[in-house]
Each structure stands twice: as C-alpha cells, then as structure tokens.
Length: 306
Length: 334
Image (cartoon, chains in turn green, red):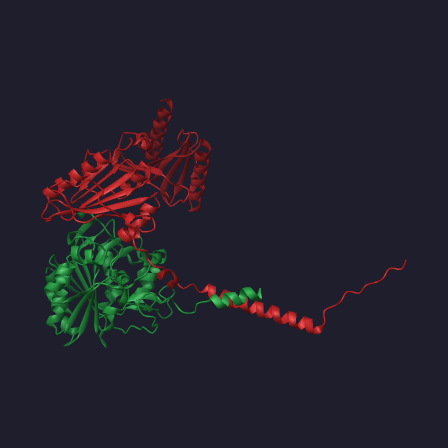
C-alpha cells in the first residue's frame, strides 16, 4: 500500500497541461465598466438597428459617455454559427458596423471584433456578414488562434478553472462591449448577453452544457463589460439557438442598451414571452452580484417610434 | 505424554509503534488522495486534444450536385460526440431520439453563388426517430408538401422525413428561385436514397379522424409528460365542440409492459397531487385522474397504452378516450 501511495504521488501532476497557449496561470481580467457611473438601461423601439442603437446611446449620453479618446475597444459579437444574417442566429452585421462606427466617432483608436465560434471561424465570420461589416467600419477582426488562448481561473469559480480563455483580444482592450441577439435556446431557455460570453471560452466547452445555468453565471462574473447591446429587433422565439426558418423569428422591434447585463437579459426575456424565473441563470447571476433582474429599478429610458 | 505449551510471540512495543506509524502514514495518504480527487478540475477535459477530423468526416457530397447547383463546400459529417459542434444546444433533442450521423453541406442555387442553402441530413436510424425530431420542431403557418408523407415549407426552409432520415434544407433568404432549388434538392435526395415505407408509424393511424388536427401529431421520444418511463409516445390534438384535447398512444413491447406502464403513469400523476376518480368511461382498464383542475385518462389495450392528457372537461376527455379505444379495437380485427 505504501508503494501504491508512493507511486500515485510520483505520477501526480500538480500543474495543468501546457498544450494550449501559455502556461502562465496569472491571467486576471480587469473590470471594463466606466468607473463611478450608476447602472443604466435604455430601451429603443424601432425596426432600423442603426437608428435604434443611436437613439438608445444618445439617451444614455452618447457613445462618448463610455468610450474616450484613444481607447482600444473590443466588440464581443455572437458569430457562433455559419448562418446568414437574415436568420438572426448571430449578431447582425448592421449592428456590428454601427457600433464600431460610433466607437470611432467617440474617439476610439482601435476597435477589434472577436468571437470563438462553434462552427469553423472563417466561414462563420464570412457568412454572417460580420467580417464584411467589420472591415467596412475600419475595425479589425480577430479570429481565434490557439496562441490567443490562456488558462484562466475564475476566483471561487467551480467550473471555470484553468480553462482556456480567448485572452488575446482582451489583453489590450480598454473597453469591452457585448453584442448579442435575443434568442430562444433549447438547453438554457434563452441565449442573450450573459450567454454571449461563452464565446470567450475555448477547449471542450460543450461539457458545461450539463450545468448550463452555473456556467452562464460564472461567465457573468468573469466579464464586467463597459456596455451591452442586446438586439431584439427580430428575436428568435423558437428552435434556438440555430433556428433555420424565418418562421422561428418574430419582429420585436426593440434595442436594449445597458451597463447592467443582468437587467438587459431580464428585459430581453420578456421579448421571448418569458419571466426571469423561467431562466435560472438570471437569478444566479443576480444572486452573485452581477446586476439586477428588476430592470424597472434602473428607471429605464424608453425611446419610442425610432 | 505431556503437551508442550507454546507461547505465541507477542509483538514488541517497538513493532507496535512501527505498525501504528505505517498505518498513520497510509491513512494520511488516503486522506490527501481523497481531498485532491474530490476537487474535480474541468480543465482536464478542456485539454483533451480535439482530434483532427479524419478524412472520413469529410465526404465529397451528400447528393450529386448538378448544374445550375454548385457545391459551396464539401459535406461534413458529425456524430453523437461531435454534433454539438454543428448545432450546439439543439443536439440534445437528436441525441435522445437515437441520432447516428449528420451530413451537412452548403449548396449554391446558381453558379454565381448569389443564393445558397444548407442541406442537413440527419440519420436517425429508424423512421420513428426521424418523425420524432421532425414533429417536435414543426413550425406554425407552414405550407405542406407532397414530396413525402411528412414534408413542409416554412418560409425559407424545407423540412421532411424520408425513411430513417430527417432532412432540413435552410435557404439563406426568401426567394422563389431558392425555394424551387430547395425543392429540387429534396427530390434529388429522395431519388438517390430509396427507403422502405414508413410502416413503423402505425400508431398515427390509430388516432380517430373526427376532430383530429393532423398537423399536431407529434412523437415524443423520451420523458413523455415529464415521466421518464414514458417514451415513444404519439400525441395529437383534437377539436371537440370548440375545445382542444390531447390524445396519446404508445405501442409497447408486450401486453404486460403496456399494463405495467399504465399503472406507473397513474402513480406518477398521483405523486403530483392527482386524485383518482371513479371510472365512468366504460373502458374497463381506464383510470381517471384529476390533476390540478385538469383530467388525465389512462388505459391499456393489447400492446398499447393510450388516453387523454390535460383535458379541461371530463366529458370531452371520456368521449375522446372511447374513440381512441375503438380505433385500437378495430385495428386488432384487421
């Protein structure tokens, strides 16, 4: 028995494998929120994404309230699937373009667009129209490469431990903006802002589907964004997250812009006909202190008829 | 003869001390091992290298692509352990329904590749499984197609079952040109993949015709009504006197298993506060349960368990249950 114990100790590997990115375990993520500002939420109603986004941001002090001269801005989009924009399974290219453009207008020195898609990255960025929109806006597309992933551990995290994180694009970012569509999701109930951060994980991340609400909570704790933009112009109300038929879509004509990702998702849930209680990850994120599900407590600014 | 008394050597105090020390060390090793192993680090899964797709996961094409169609990419194959890589959260639905393989390919409707579609062919092993995933994802406001027994258009997309295959053809946009190309691809697939008839779906024919909403027929592959033992159950909606009712039928392996499942289902509903009422249905094996203002009727006959689920009125539920029993009885005479 002593021999077995000694053998076990001999074979014990205290450090994680170094096959992905760097072996540096000291990756920490700063908060990207603008300091000393209270949580804000704006709901703009209209069919034109560019107009509703601009209207919502204007009501919140314009993009200049969040982006300052010289900032390096990271746009974390949803480019998960090689799906055309009309099927609303990914961030709409019009929204990506307009967000990047407004960042530059506010003085950003650099705007980077990224995601770690589920399907082949090159095909996803091309067929979603996000690549074209990014280039048109003068931003840079950073498609994931193995060298961009660093092991990361969320403090007190149960699932995100020594997990490959798409740190390359985050490394030099001063500000982070999350852009996601409102979608039904077969496993989690909905895929919106909080679940969008899933695209920062690498590795065999599908195992987290077994505890989907906890992983979304941990993702919410992992990233404190500057701003989130939840696109409910056309929502995928059935057969998510991939959809496929335009019959899965419903024009909900709503753009949600917020500095509170939990509040944004809580409002987004209403576009799917859901209550906060139907989406356990919202309650978990709120309990963890990420934000509030009581979006009305933020005195949301409503902009109608854009 | 005198017997010698042999005194057994007793361990000395030094030996006892060494023994205790060794056992203590072993106990500490066990405790340490238990402590380390109890803290599972998901990263050991993260770093399992994703094997490069072997050539067998790429095939030239799902179908012969003839002009003006052009292949935008080779076809990719996905299996149960890789299905998530293609359809993410929706994979669960297929995996619980007997999924074997997905072949997916993008096809342009013209040489200029101005309009394109993506063809998804799910091999579900059996026609019943294919119907399950087809029916559970059926869209509303559809346009039925006669290409196969189960086929429809939903705006830009086409869905059908063909033997053990569930097929989706998703158009990148809405256009008549693309719709026509999609239909041609569907027909091409059927032509190149002849199958046996859908004889496995006999339960569908057991639903009575009166009031039946045919488009509502669904096959639940697992966890029917939230009960883990109720799998492969067909459900259908009926409009009876302007009230909707849900009938269900499931074919089991034997008369005995059908009977046992009916009893288990009764116990399941009772667990959730269901109250068993007097059987006023004339169906000998029926059980009537009131669950939170709704009515459940469960009965068994031959290989079948059947009944009515979440009915708003008892009279309507009994009426439907009797009609279902009649069709089952009539089928046994064939």
